[in-house]
Length: 103
Length: 80
Figure 1 (cartoon, rainbow over the protein chains, first blue to last red):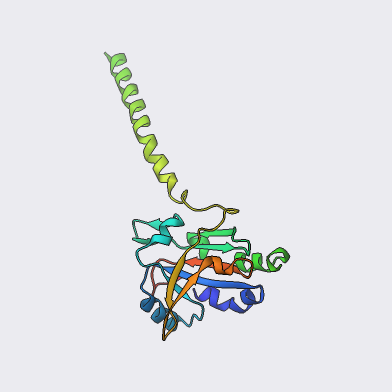
Figure 2: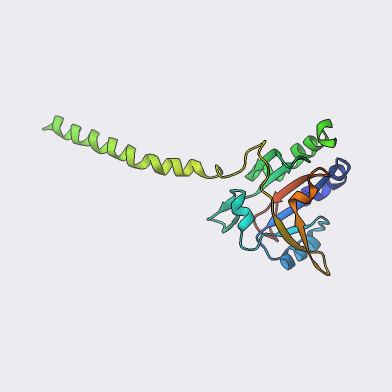
């Protein structure tokens, strides 16, 4: 999450809203956000409904996998990063800055 | 005698192959439930706590206005 925070200005400049999602409670997520200095919302998928809809619930963790989705203004998915690849947001930041994403 | 044994062995191996195939398929399935690039992202409404109130975020509210990065993470208070 800190990786996105560090790139937040670039993402916001490219008209992009960052939303963290986990299955923690809203209050745990807020405490987590404060602890690591994240200013974008960390959403609570309590119960995991959305996590399952996105096909990334992992039984082993009883939690989501680490996945980033970049969703364009048309509501369609532009990029996906899964597990280890999801830790470096550079690809997402670059994609946001492509001209077509700004329109 | 040996030939017979090898036939039985081959049959067993084949049977093993067929019964384990679905297991492999299941292994590959992980992630196959994910929406693909180009798909419309499933809409949702989720809550977060901004320090004083619980607020709701609806994904489709950003439609036509902003790109959205959805960053799923495993647990609060862990790295990544």
